[in-house]
Image (cartoon, rainbow, N blue to C red; front, side, top):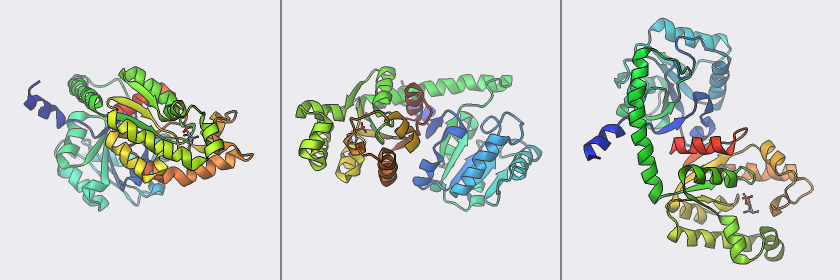
Length: 351
Ligand code: S3P
């Protein structure tokens, strides 16, 4: 493929992809310093021309409470945009940090910039969310704002949009190919709490991407000739942690194009995180304490949870580690209520 062709497509590539505007990890964005969200409305938040619904009211209430500023920018007219905005207000959303721009003429960059000004934020603190590549994402790229491409809410679209979608598919095929190329030289590293599904998601990813999956805990057990439980009981946690660091250092030297599933405590050591960053993209699988408790209620292979108050142990440990997981990660994925296959698809979509 000619270099010019690659460059031509890249300008349409989104920063990330997501299944829906309602499925984005907003907590993760906030932790990464994002303070403003710019949204397209039609087919991004509700069906074309529809009023704000309960789902939208709930989302924007939550975003406001989290501390985000919001700006809607639509190519549609004032009546349509204001109707959506008023619907949120009528639903009880505090709109004091919510703005809108109509007839925005996306992909012209002027109103992306107006949106950042209305929110009083620098461009690097803002992320754009939209469903169309050639207007929404292209405009955001031109304005120097990160974008998240979401699937359109309504699959039935007007004929001129159907045609545009065909062209979008061509671009996204190139995008997916560039992701594949990148995976040949990089590893995908999965981190997250015990029971977050690293192993099963790792296996699902390995199958989908035709890559090998390496489990660092298994590696440790095989090399030590002991189970994790035995290592903790006979040699102690510090000894286990030093084995963990040694294994990572070993893998970092000769591992390419692999999925690496880490033990839940790996990101606790700063030196481990540094090594992981040299190995590839770090994906944090977020899980709620309730899900962990349910998944591990009959498990006795995790020495750190062998306590009569297992529930409290999960909550305490997860709480004390959360910031470290976020800090280490390049990508955060919410896993509760999703199958390993769906999580794997989401990771691939976000690469
Ligand atoms: C640990 C998690 C375990 C294992 C060890 C310690 C932790 O791995 O490495 O029991 O500190 O969270 P999983 O996350 O695969 O259960």
